[in-house]
Image (cartoon, rainbow, N blue to C red; front, side):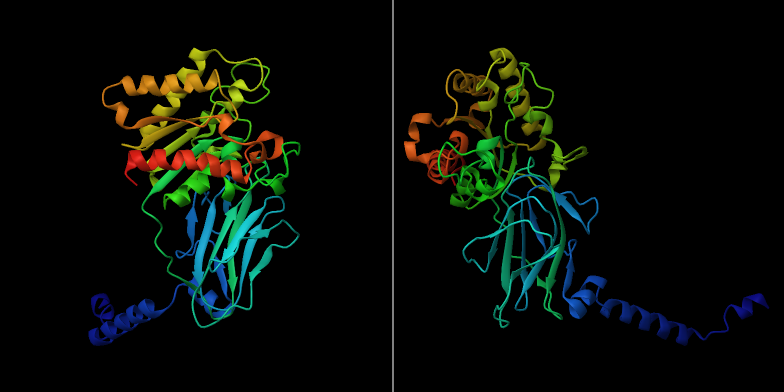
Length: 375
């Protein structure tokens, strides 16, 4: 009797119901698409958002970041676009439809209108880049708000070439918009988009990531009373974000063909200086760490322009030691950018390269990479 009760529903009706459920499931838009159609809200985990650089997706609805130069990009429909951004301290550069960069400064609003009055007849693009470095603070991106009924569109593919930069204040573009060497650091004078790193990558038609923090060295940080600091740049290299030492970056997410290391200035700009053997051993270990994450990567070690001897000599010796190993002369290179290459008018805050100084640096680095990589 129980067996007969389990078959009281005709098989043809069961088949029709299952087919109808399947059809409705396949046609129903995801929740994020329904939100877009009704309110224009786009969450941070929308698959059509591009993230360039290191981001923490532990909470995919609240994406955290703090390294300089990270980029969020998208293509969208409609006439306006707002950012859902939780940040009161950092500076951002916003570009809409390949227009001139516009500065986005902190305020009390979590939703910030960045584009309006656009033509509704064709797709638009938006790029948001963090100008400032981790010492200024972290940000949280929650998504976009578009016109009701509008949505994001599939993003344009990113360049196949990729360059990672490991550095300090120079790479972070500390003081690049400063009026003179006499000014001191402010978030307003830092702009990662004007770093030699960003300039070089753009000239080489490459994507890039910047893992840099002012004052950090290979073994000794700026002004430390010890010759070996507890947390120099190599200790930060595997972090997804600087502010959280526990969350480690998944290096398989983004694999560059080139890594540029520009470190050593802070090790030797103040006393006491680390011993050359300690510095060089740590530099060798950093190169080994880079290689362990990126098989076959080409590494360019930069000396200068804010420091010269003996630091530049030590970096050169590290490269020569690496090249002496079998086959390594083809994947590690030394690039020197002498302080004398920069003119008097090419220095910004606290004697860091300004826009023109950064251009001078890129003019040395770009041909070096292009030659070795055949780019």
